[in-house]
Every structure is written in C-alpha cells, then in structure tokens.
Amino acid sequence: MSPEWLTAIGTLGTFVVIAASAIAALMQLRHMRGSNQIIALNEVRETIESAAFQAAESFVLRELPDRLNDPAVRTALVMPFFPAEYQPVRTIANFFETFGALVKNGIIDPRIACDLWGNVTIRVWDALAPVTANRRTLPGWSAVWENFEYLTVLSKRFYAEHPNGAYPKGMERLPLPELWPEGKATRDVS
Image 1 (cartoon, rainbow, N blue to C red):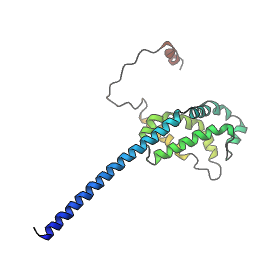
Image 2 (tube, rainbow, N blue to C red; image 1 turned 90 degrees about the horizontal axis):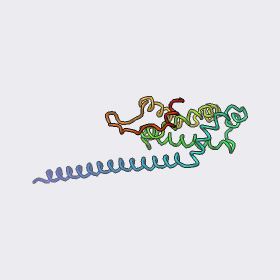
Image 3 (cartoon, rainbow, N blue to C red; image 1 turned 90 degrees about the vertical axis):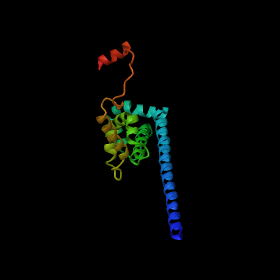
Image 4 (cartoon, helix red, strand yellow; image 1 turned 30 degrees about the horizontal axis):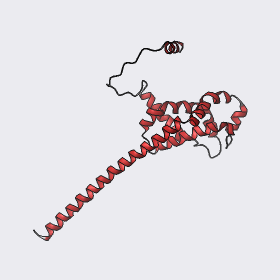
C-alpha cells in the first residue's frame, strides 16, 4: 500500500472518530438540557406548592381585587416600592416573571409549563393586570413583568387549543365513580 493510501485511511479514521465524538457530545448536551429542565420544573413545583406561595396567591386572588377599589391602595401600588402588606403582589408577580423567562429562554418547555401551571398563571395575571398596567406607567418600568405576560399569552393559547384538557386523543379514559351529593349540588348552582 502506498503512503498516500495510508494517509487517506488515517484521515478517514480521524474523521470518523471526531464525528463520533461530536455526536456523543450532542447527545450529552441533550441529556444535560433535559436534566436542567427537570431541576427547573421541580423548583417551580416546590415554590407553587409552598405555604408561603399559597398564602401570597390567596391574597392576590381573594383580597387584592376588593382592595383595589380604594384609591389609597392604588396609589401605594404605583410607588416604586410596595408597602409591606402588599409584598405578596410582588412575590407572585416576580415568581411568574422568572418562570416566564425560563420558558422564553428554552429552559422549560412551554407545553409542559402551560399544561401544568397555565391555569394558575392566567388566574394570577388577570388579578394583577390592573396593577401591572399602572406600574408600567412609571418611568423606566414599561416592561415590568413582561415575561409573566409572555407566559400568560402562551397559557391562554394552550387553553384555546385544548379547551377540554390536553389528554391524548384516542387514549381510553378510566371510569369515574358517581358524584357525591355535595358535588352534584355544586354543579347545579353554577
């Protein structure tokens, strides 16, 4: 065999080894991305299920709407710093701002985020929309909570595409037991 053939075979072998290494590296990056997403999803879940978050969410959904009828409260909420009693508003909005940034930047898959937490995202956004609109009038704050808004838009689209849930089409459903009398009474009222 001539030296040229040996060089060609050696070059081809080197190419195969480099290509295999590149493929292995891409696979490893994909696994790392999946691991990072799992970690991020777990952090989101733990936060949403925490007692502190639940209390802040309850404040935003149950107490804040009535309080927004008071001009003094509205004035306090357009100041750069929230009064201490309104920190739950900031806590909730900043959490969803971070969550939205994770989705927007591909750390968390949007379909997973919307499937798991789209409903709560929409409810909280709707409750905080008046606060957001008014805070955006502050100088330099026109983009406040825009990642939260982005996540809400995605969530609303998701629910428009899946109005009856996202259960896989064609998959059989399990039979459910009969409703309790209390459950039937609740359905009759609404």
